[in-house]
Length: 417
Length: 223
Ligand SMILES: Nc1ncnc2c1ncn2[C@@H]1O[C@H](COP(=O)(O)OP(=O)(O)OP(=O)(O)O)[C@@H](O)[C@H]1O
Ligand SMILES: [Mg+2]
Picture 1 (tube, rainbow over the protein chains, first blue to last red):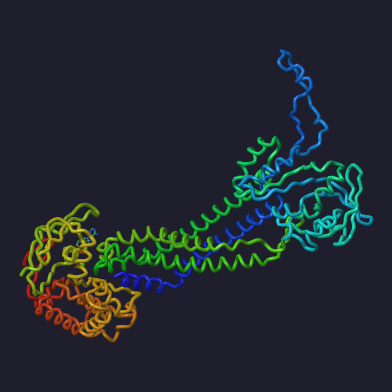
Picture 2 (tube, each protein chain N blue to C red):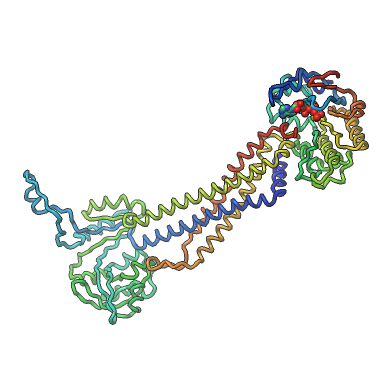
């Protein structure tokens, strides 16, 4: 029985080709734009996420200058009924390092949810090469621990990680910094600390993290080298970076560890709160725009189906007079809507793919901050699936009400003329 | 054997105000009978026919066809009943303009599903040939003349071999030769056991039928 209704639906669609094509294109456009929006916006999100994880550990432990410490006066008069107020305390001169770093490291390494730990000593330095001088940061690490957290091997443009171990007075330089100073692998650069300590270090590799803000200022060297530069002992550790099994558990673990070790702990989401916020905004934008596009496409179909039903009053009356029931009529018009929906949605995802592909090939300069040359696009099959499903569901909904109206037509009223 | 029984049918229209269109209509038709209904324009013939065809359910009284009480049945059941048992030719010939002549005739049969597609097609051709429009079979219905369309509509009414064939001036647009042909076909079908009810203005057409009901102002004045 359905095949007859299907044939009627098909005949209706073919008889009004122009109208049918307009309806299909309405859906096509909506779905294509949805796919494009979703692909591009989530592509940006993914890129930003990846970059964030390349630059930020899941959790970072460090020591912060204690500004809210109790003043001497307060200590002396505590408990007595004397009102004491010290205005505008200056921080005391204290070394900002993790006092019991090696115990913390051992403790962390035993935890099952921790997949990587890397201790760091960082120092601001001036890099001198020839007559140029740039300020930047020198990061002392155990290079293999660091590699486990941030995939340094993958970031290396020249040289090898092992070179760093072979020569204690060597460093891996960020590509931006190396370019600015015109330094190549094998060159010697002079490093000066703010306290005036001078070291000559050999460049044994050049890396590119993709984040301009880091690549322009940072170099890696061995922990011991920085400790010597700072004239401290081998227990001097300023930061511990931690990688955990589940990145979303970081926000919960950070305060626990801060308390446990008596240090500051910062999780990646807090460290990148602007990024997390802008990702959320992009997500919300994706939803709003997608729903808007689909609703607009739905109204388009609703309009066209309503017009079709109005045009076909007589036909509907004849069909009912010759024995087609209200259900058959609904089936006929819903079939028309679904055909429009399926064709529109399929064309839509194809077009959406083409658009996304074109955008992904378009040159895009990320500037100094992120080094990309093409727009990031996320070719996730899920968007295409959602596009097709949404397209069909929207058209079904949009087609249902006009179809319902068609089914309720009183044939006698029409056939009287 | 009584095929159709209408008893005490009353119908009102409410535009512009409540007024009776049909008043206390009661009659029976026997199987194989060829009945005509005549009366002045506006006396309610079409209105009565729509009730008899089960399309109009807004009336008082009862309607029984083939022993089955149709008054009060739900729309889907009535649609199914119409499809199987009633062939209808409208006063203003109504074909589906986007379909071919052949498809127009076939649709009620495809809906009924009693015959295969091939059988349905050959039966449709046969009905079209009977009415002399088989050469138009593949044309779009909208491309036919008024008289041709009316004959196609008659062919469509016959396709499911319905118990009852109803026509609202089924020969109104036909020349006398074709009108006579149509009448002969209907008469033939009546002889073979189908029952015919036709509204007509054509005196000769009425005179040749088995029985004529005369209506005036929504009432039967003679039957
Ligand atoms: N929908 C309606 N609302 C109100 N009055 C109506 C409606 N349809 C028909 N009428 C009136 O009902 C009466 C009967 O109409 P009907 O169409 O049955 O006449 P008829 O006998 O078939 O006439 P004709 O021979 O001209 O076809 C007429 O007076 C007509 O004006
Ligand atoms: Mg009439």
